[in-house]
Length: 191
Ligand code: GRF
Image (cartoon, rainbow, N blue to C red; front, side):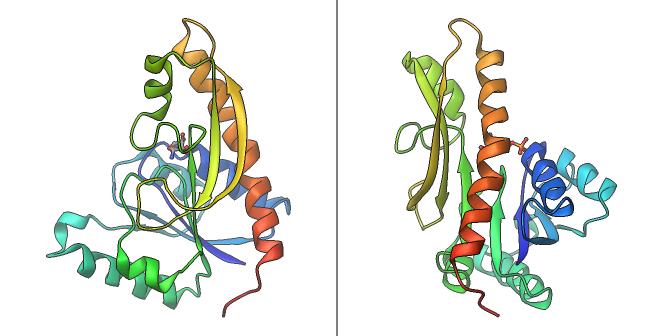
């Protein structure tokens, strides 16, 4: 299964998925990492693992559509079958959604539909919930709204936001590869 990972940040999920592919735990090949943030740390991690980096800044294009058409051309050249979002901080638009229907996956650090959008961990702590978690879902046109594939709960560590965030990330790193492996096994290849 050929996949592209889209990321805008640190790339810890990228790193775990890349290792899982290399070690045969995840039956997939990462064709490329697409980032909208050329200065993000995920670029460094991708280079170290010798995976192709495509860095495209949306502001360099006249429209979101033109941006996504360029991304799409590259994905098609590489034969990418699935798009895996790993900290990609941008809504996927109609062009990519139409080209990859039910073939774009996201991971979000809350139990959706609670706390969608930015800083889900901070939102959960501010709300005072005792349990939050991680959701892996298919991407639709909404913000963190598509069909849920898997969830795992994580207890909030009272008064320790950093520790709570750390537990959430640790759970993400296990849940994402497992969920993707199940998904790729259960859905037939497209091309
Ligand atoms: C993760 O918490 C993920 O759930 C969210 O963005 C974060 C990305 O972290 N969508 P990293 O860049 O993979 O370290």
